Amino acid sequence: MSKSIDLYYTTEEDDDVDDDMYYTTEEDDDGGKSPVRPPPYFVKTLVFDEISELYISGEDDDIDKRSDAFVKKEEDIIVQYDDDVDEFFFNIMRRKFNPSYHSFIWRCLLFWYLFPTNYEFYMDDIIHLWIAQGYIHIPFTQVKTMEDIGILWFEEFGRLQVIKLSHIDSSTGRLRYKLNPTFVHKLQGRPNEINHYYRLDDVNAYISESTLHASLRDTIDLITLKDLYQATKLYTFLILHEQGSRLDQIPRDLFLKLPSLRALDLSHTCITELPNSIGNLEDLRYLNLSGTLITTLPDSLCDLYQMQTLKLRGCLKLLRLPKGMSKLINLRHLDVDVSCLLVSMPPRFGDLVELQTLPVYIFNCDKGSYWQCDLTPPKKR
Image (cartoon, rainbow, N blue to C red; front, side, top):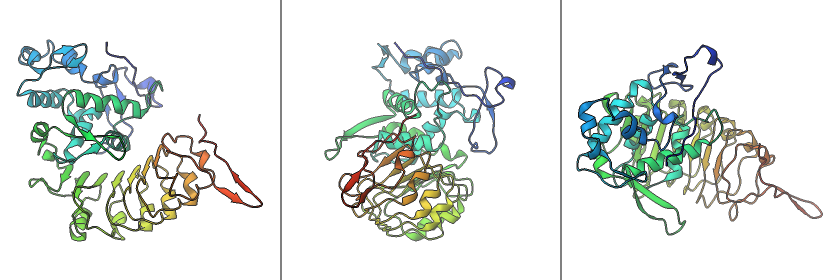
């Protein structure tokens, strides 16, 4: 049986809002704060059961007749697809989760566009990126976390074969996924109808002032990187690790030109430092520096109060974190090799009450006549 959770959102003006309406709290892609009817997945999960159970039946005759071709259920598991199921699925998503309604699940669907067919990714990276963009919000009932909801959505995309398991990472034991090539073919070019998305290997894509999300290959050079300066409202910038990075520095003015960034992935590049200007990214919520050669992080990083996810796994030359890390009051995930790399953790680290991910917890050890180590984990609410 499908589980049911209540996921309604309210504002301070709840009494004046119709029961069938909710307000998005982030700035919409076209600007402003818009009242919209809650999509069905706010009421019931598994998410896409609503497509076959609620939105297909009886609403459109042509869709109703084809519902059996779309999905055959056996104990809530999809066991059969027709050849044209991807197009059918996308048409349903497009019609019923129309982008004009600012549907969060629609945004998650289009977000896949940033990844090429053979690119491999981890589930938690995708979920953290969704959260950074504001596609997943804290449930009003507090029954589940944003990460819990993200897992439900990710698993549903897997159930519908939008994504598929690639292999198990032998070094970490984590599962790697990639997109279904058929789905990528159907998705190709669709987001660029409004040009909010850009992927370097899409010959039909181009960067403009309206570009909000962009991904580039790790073989890019500084000239290509500076093309992004046109996208002054860019929310997402991902450098995808596929071959071998040639990027060994970040332009000093990059973060001044792209002040609206919410998610930044520079992992596995050859950079050795971050410009102090990263402190200009007041809305930055996701930063991935894994596998880079950085030795220190600028103190200005600690002024990014919206930061939710900081990934530093495999930064072999990084020994310390900035002393002001306790100011990152919204930090939820810190992925860092603390057990073998960091010599100490910053003071007052236990004040990060939102922290959910930290492999090993090590507080500062004050050397006097003897070592005093506080190994208390972060405080919980």
